[in-house]
Length: 321
Image 1: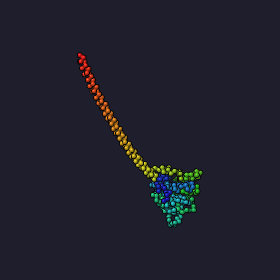
Image 2: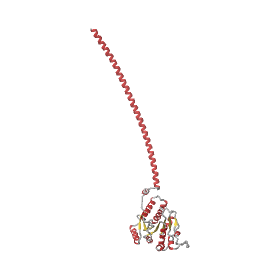
Image 3: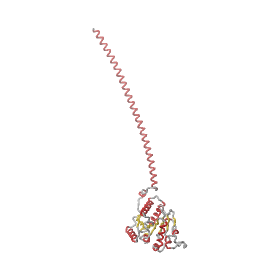
Image 4: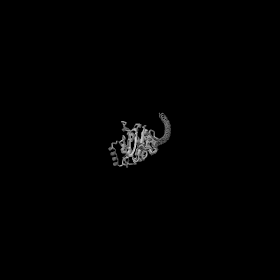
């Protein structure tokens, strides 16, 4: 299995979530249950249609749907390489009735041309041997019968077609499937080419589900912040948060210790101040006592002197008489 199957290898990545969003949009379009076959195409090669088709198939399988992915690019099919399966037998062998590797194989048995993958509920029909006339094989009755049988056997069929601007293979298939998704590349696909592809599909009676814009540039920082659960970056964020909590706890404890130390110092200063005030009050009391004692002693002496003076005056008065 290639790293291209990011929906399987890293189901919690932001890209996988985008494919699940695409799956959900398709399911909402299928309210009446008639949308069972989807073609994925593009304007030119290199826009990512095979990558989108494979990952979209994986997301449907992860949702419990029984999915068959058909590689209808019989000129340059890649799905066998993405899923790591055998390239043959495949679609070209089934449609042509020619199995080069096994002439005794019953070409009418679809099960012989559909291979299991490592993804549960997902089966792939590779492109098979490169035929000389792919377009003629796709307009054969066998292609119609193939899609009808697969619609009965599974929940959804995804067809990986060819680029529309090079060959007409996908235009043929758009008439056979229920809807078509066009994959474009940001800053690579030209509007005129896309407009022409849409017009061609509508001209042959095909239905278009929508356009997928691939290869959109995004900053690494924004990419890391664009997902909400279970990713590696979220684990790192949780780890950073734990570290921040521990740091804050240590800081708070340190602050509490400093506050306690400051409180102790303040209390000691208050006690010292109270002690000093007490000593000062005591000294003032002692001084007051001394002053009062000195005042009392002076008063007694004064009274004694006054008494002596009175006695002297009395004696003088007696003598005069």
